[in-house]
Length: 583
Image 1 (cartoon, rainbow, N blue to C red):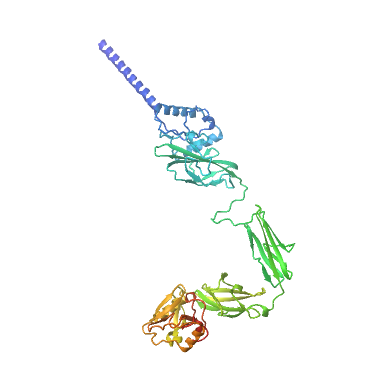
Image 2 (spheres, one colour):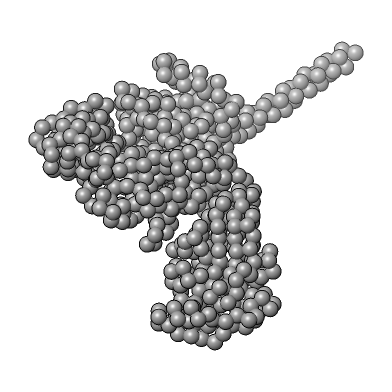
């Protein structure tokens, strides 16, 4: 009985011993595999002092290899060494404490960064110490856009060496087509990483070093890191830059109403102001050799009769300068009867029209009744200067663009002696939509010089907003059954056709005698279905009259107004017979 009991105890002890051996063996291999396995290291900044304690070669610090490193022993040694150093060395400085708080707060959101070649996260030393860069990294010292001879990778909007006044510095990073895949972008200011860079960083007063680093992979998984350093200065007492509205800066120069001119009043006033000037800019204005003092750019002086010289000089704080000289001739006041004058004009002050355009015609002369042509006429509508639309021996004409409501018209005349006279008118325009009727005209078609008189007519033919005289005349002829052959670009109607409408046409004796006197030779007569150019004479064709005159502009340059009288007539001598009243 005792033997059995003793045997049972011994068996129990042997079992416990075997279990202990098995457990110990499992624990040993478990610890071994734990130490050999790669581990995730929190992204906590490590000070330079701590980094100096890491044995050379422990961290690969941005080095790149062509093949991945699969050595578990090397990797475990690196992790253990880094882990031990972090556990033993605690930097209690304020900066280290702040770095730790920042890292702890952003640990869950900071993007992962891989160690080249092994697929694990980068160590803190690689995240926060941009100074330790070696291996295949490209340091772009040679070009300002973040590239070197290996190829183009990225550009930034940073202007190296610029001085700014806002400590919240904004810039952009633009990736170029390098054929590689961007894996990571990191920004550092004075060696400190900008976590979760979103286009802005904080600058300190004075000099700041900004590093932009981008990591790329090619098709084989090899990593290339490109970085570029910039220097940006913060000077908070620098006046803030004006917002960039996309417009170029105004150049340094002069804004003035001075010009070489003739005046008839010795009391002379003008303005002269600087443009694009800085706070140190100066302007000097002199009449002959006497300096003029102005107020807010306005100057007044007394001129001598004859020629007066006005000099304006300016200098910017940057050294830019200019100098202009003007000659102002002064003469005694001109009597009203000696001023140039408008002899005729087809409007009056307060004139009212309907539509957005009006054909203005005028005739001007000097005190000796000499014709004043358009080169001495300045005409503007609502402040916009217009060029003449036509000019002939009888008038100078303009097509006036009008706004709905009141429009101001200014006409300034000058003669050869510099005497001037200004006229002002108000034109009221009743607005009209496109295609709306704006008036009625009297219109007719005749060929008296070919023995044909009133071929068709309408005393109340409607005209519409937006159509030219050519449009109106063609519409009138079409409405009366005629076909028109014309040159729309010039508004010239060369032939009008209608079955039987021109039967019995002949060249009248008066037309033949006038053509012969003008040296215009005769040609074959027309057919009975059409009449136009080269019928009966070399100078035949169609011209139009407006309110009794033959305009010097084509139908496409005409804008008819309410009450106009329009006559389309056949000529045998280039229109001269019509102008001379033969028909």
